[in-house]
Length: 127
Image (cartoon, rainbow, N blue to C red):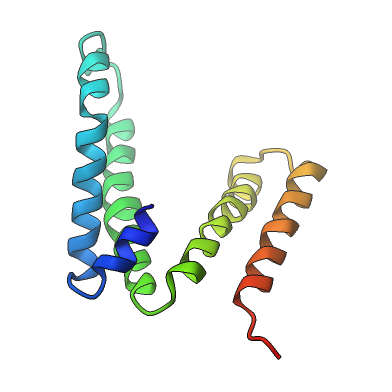
C-alpha cells in the first residue's frame, strides 16, 4: 500500500514529504503498542551502541531509504515499483548471509529465483 499511495502522491509531493507522511503514519499506528511496552521497558539497559543503531536505522534506513524509494516510484509505473518490493527479500537474504553468516538454504535460493524471475517477467518489454 505504501508504494501505491506513494505513487499517487508523487505528482503532488516531494519524495521527502511522502517519506515524512509515511513515517508519521507508521509512528501513529504503532504508538499505542509502543506506549504499552514502554511501561515495562528499562531505557537504561541498552548501551550507547544500541541507541546509535536506532539512530542509524531512523536516519539511513527510514529517511534516506524511503526518500530514494519514493524518488524512484515517481518515475516508474506503480506496478513496476510494487514488483521490486520482492527484491527487498532477496537482498535481505544475501546480506544476512554475507554479514550475519546466516545459513543459505536451498529453499531460500529457490524463493529468490522465483522473485527474480517474477521481476524479470513483469518488467521486460513485450516483443
